[in-house]
Image 1 (tube, rainbow, N blue to C red):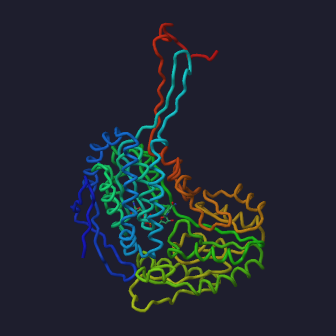
Image 2 (image 1 turned 180 degrees about the horizontal axis):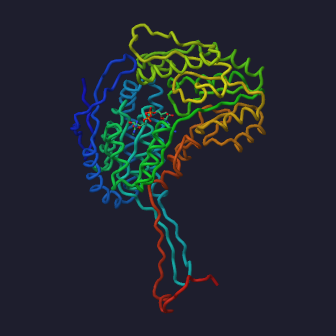
Image 3 (image 1 turned 180 degrees about the vertical axis):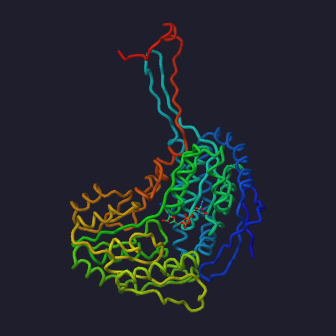
Length: 499
Ligand code: NAD
């Protein structure tokens, strides 16, 4: 069995804590590798390396830093198949979906190539007699990120690309479920010319995370994962004086208005509900048809589509719609929630409970499930299931549907399907959710916009990628400069008034 390492100071470094986690192939259920879990002392070594390397990197002009990212994009494309295979083998998602995971990270790297322009400061000429004022964005120093299992390429790149483009060093603590691709990315960006110690990967669990949160040299922490951990990271990191952005879980509603194209809505729901086995923070997990007739029409369109879904291992290539979930524990939790839905009175109109795949009996596969007549008190509505389970909550009116999305504790994404521009505009204006789709089921903003939810889906002030990421990974310094002609006037004892 393969034993993975950390990536510290430009080299593969073996774990010394004596603690390891098992890395599974979710399609077969076999343990395929073990990953070392770092101690606080191992994390501290990476911080020391980063702190030594960072000043020279920050002093490298931004265009040269951007060139490293340009070469990194080329290498990502060169190794795309290899990366996607490694990603699917540990995560379980289909190969085309793994390529999408890498591609959506790559696009953020492309955006960050604009660093020379994005980091330009502001300048006011003649702010007063002989006075110029300018603001510049400076790197923070050593920064860190803690990432979830569900996008092992995209989310690390969302964090480290802007951090590095801004002149920081970055320590990545990836998910212990699928750490191989993050390690490959660190090697690849060094091949692209990144100096050693600027991007390091320290594998681990809570011990490494707590060490990041408490380390006085680390200036900023990015986190993506489940809400209870996001809240914990935000509070502990902020208490230690760090800048923190922490993104959490989701329960994304899709409102289907009576005038929607019902085939389009059903196709969208099936892709957004079951793609990646529902393990996306932007997956649609709640369908909200407006009016009984809309609900009946929608359910009738959904059932045959869902029954046709092909579930299988990534090795089947394009012949599968979604793969296994990430662990046996995740599968058991999903099936427990399905049972709770049945027990609480929801109608299970597509029942995936007895799903089995010949030859893959030990894999973590979950068949597709569709619930109708779900109500807001039910556990399957309140909790994030993170599996191939779509719940239908029937709403009598548009206002009731809007109210459902608004009252849910999560506010990551939501969508409305309608032909009515007035309803769509009203929905986008009023709903208290961060990312809105209008006839688009998974409205993940592109790299040059920002990504972030509201309510319990995000803690902190700035979003991921796009212009916000350049704000998050820099601090502003403002200089007021006056040259001799003004100084001749003598001392001033009060703030200057503008005449
Ligand atoms: P998770 O919270 O279990 O783990 C995320 C990270 O936190 C991992 O690196 C893990 O090692 C670490 N961690 C886990 N338990 C910890 C603890 N007790 N103390 C400190 N660190 C701990 O999440 P996951 O299962 O890997 O990912 C799925 C979750 O992530 C879902 O809730 C999903 O909605 C969410 N997610 C959110 C977004 C977003 O942008 N809002 C994007 C992707 C995933």
